[in-house]
Length: 212
Length: 212
Image (cartoon, rainbow over all chains, first blue to last red; front, side, top):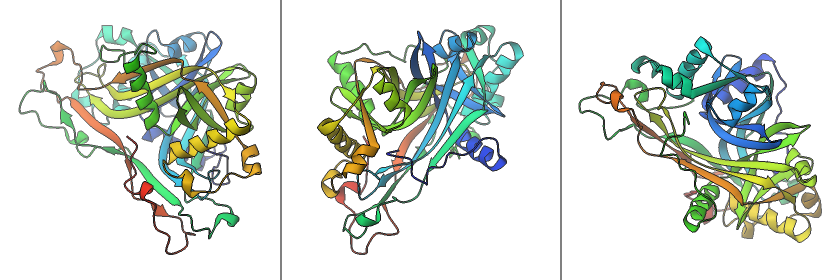
């Protein structure tokens, strides 16, 4: 992220292969960072999201800035970033991170009625695939207290930086170590809630939980 | 992130204990998400950062939107988020993530001269503590091709969500499993670059690399 070397590729929109790469990046995440305007100033916050076909669904409380921006038709910007490694180059200039990132721009639409309830279901399944079948339906009060904003994955770009450092030739053979420290997200085994009744087994979909 | 339950605490600014909590969250990260205005629309992008005392230093290329916003004195918003677990509650409404997040608002200042060069050093040491002593100084061209924006950690809030699900009493004893899937970032052992000369040992500061 020090600069934009050749290995950082801005994928053009809408071609099939690129679309699959963008969707894979989106499907690996839980939380995106959303920028919106509040009093003409930019604000960024993290929030839960899920990809739903050609859109992302953003979760918010009813009074959140994202929801208010969607109500007034104001623009949003959504970023999802995964860090894959620390790039340890022979210069500071080339030292960086390996990462995969998607940024989406557009207007959000506040969902209501059955679209709202369906979106909440998608959010649960995006968070924990398989979970929906095990839990009760939302109450009317819960539905009123949550909001989901849908945003099309239309104006979108992806950046991927990977591989070893791209050092200047003049820096090779200088005796300085170079390489990458790999990074990944690890999930532990499920920890039961203290108030869980004895004898309830951990559901299969939570054991060895993985994201990609 | 479904709502803001009691366990999500917005820390008041500037008291010592809170300040330490905010700094610990900032010091654990590599990449923040920065929102800025471009043609009056919000844009969010990921970028490298480091905390430097009472400021964060944001890395950008000379022509990046963050740098242009800083040049014209326009507001920025910076978020750093760490995910600690998937909260598997007995309802969709209470299902969420455990996380720690800091959001900073303010104007950025584009650094120049010795402050710029010093900030680049801080960024290298923020990325890989101990690294600076092993690498050469930046060239004049490299200094011209990078930019660092400093932003005070002044208008700042932190949110922390942790612990088991906070299920409604009516949902207890319904036979549904509940708990948390812990999440953390793992670092692998350093992978040497393919062009590394034989006989160069991995520096101690890269072995068993950890962040917190």
